[in-house]
Image (tube, rainbow, N blue to C red):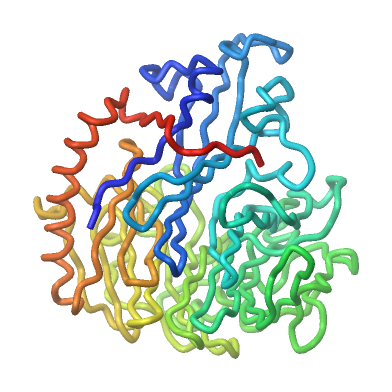
Length: 447
């Protein structure tokens, strides 16, 4: 198995904009991997972005070597990690970008720059999702965007209101687990994730299914009117909105459940991306308010919710302070529905649960696992492998599926060791600059 896989920049893009790969990110440019998704075939997709915004550069700058730019990229890999193709979509605000590379993007791919999540749908189509309940459907070969749904990020903005979901995950039987947003949470005008929902119908380029609400994070968004009703998201057969949504909410449930909790502990909470534990059970991350001065020790929970909207329990075995995901904002959860396992990685440990009970915690202060501090958990493949991404080296790490969770430590240790060896080999082959990998072999498509 290949453990280390580069996340590359297409050489035409680097050459066109004369990107200085030795330049520090603090000088106004950067590369960031947002998500990874794996198809049932074993093919891997990575979603990431590259941008440059330099102080003193005029908006009308015509020289691509100086002009600001922003691109969203999706790269497709074969199961063995071989690069197959890269799709490029330009940020529409930068109208002077090279149109051969993906900018400016018009039509269905216009808002793809804002996508932060990936999901491979049952028919193989790729769904790229982002805030504003934006959902783009992209063909499996990355050659075209076939549909786009979305709505304005703020209540008072103009624009088409045809949303779908901010996050999507698939169940073993092909249902879609989604999160959708609402205006007015904690009196914000922005659209914030608030509803966990599911649909039994397919999402295609010609058909958008109705979602069934399972749980809400905040029960009473303010200043709602009939204009805020979501006819595409139903609860008990009626559109979600105003005072109609699942109760008790997740924050109400957590306040009642924890004897030491106060309602204020969950004020201004946020909803993370849910994961599928099995066909009828999901895990939903909820985390409290993020403070400027630091939030370590603030409340968080991974709540187990059934496909009927019942609160089944929550993942245990994590200390609010010693295991806090607020350090580095590591709220990602990955689940393996075939084996009913749940994983979480933060700066302090790699955690694994089965049946809601913690089965393993790898302490990242242990030198064997310490390199994992620099990784973010991205996905759990259909084969049970974990996929992580290094936050500065722009490399994916694959950790094989352990036969039992008791073997997770040994498997992770061996994967980290193999990653280091393969990384050395890749550096000799690719000769990256400051961990920026540049590829000229894969096909480049404009979305």
